[in-house]
Length: 272
Ligand SMILES: [Fe+2]
Ligand SMILES: [Fe+2]
Image (tube, rainbow, N blue to C red; front, side):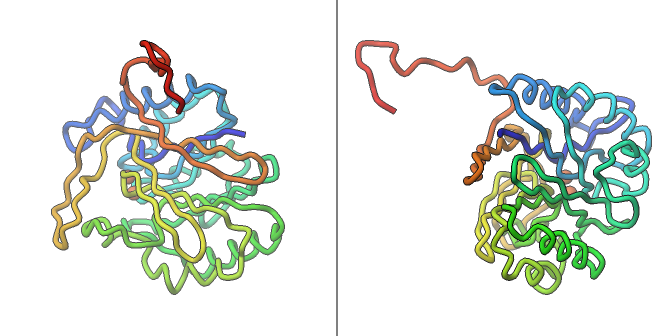
């Protein structure tokens, strides 16, 4: 089973450009084309928050129009740029989403449990994991203790070293989030968005990744007082492979980088 993570599409309506210069609508179309063209065909796509930029109904209407071009099912969770209630309304036909409070899901695909968490709090940019969310996750994990589990969440539960982003990570992650995962060895991986960069780490015995945005990226600036800037590094999606035992994830860049070239062209053959 192959599936993708698409994140931080930040779609704007009426041809508006994010930060006056990023055409997120065109980037979203390119991401959708990229996912549809991937072979072997992807089984589904998880969209891990910041679907739209301002969180208004017009943006979600346009998002739905565009994302329906995907040739495979997709599942959504919100990010800090989403508006939970407006998003819930826009995806009212998405039966897998929880019906009130946090907007999240728990589904099973070929023996793999996939949990999508809502780490947002209305009106704030940092992430929160309150008692209700903790209880819901605890229940999901204990109800499916034997199933290998992959958790999607918009806000990473760790510090990245990018100062201005670390101010808006999952607040109180060590107090509110990590204790819930203690002893839950079925959790194989955590996949995040929000930071608009490819980042990997390992915490609490669990590998974690952050997926780049389909549009603009956060500048890799590790100075202790870094300015909040973005950069047009190549957009990308994550491609996950689940073989029933192992979960592997790849970065797949969106854009034209030329056609694949044969390693066997020329006089000599080189083994990979
Ligand atoms: Fe974002
Ligand atoms: Fe975000």
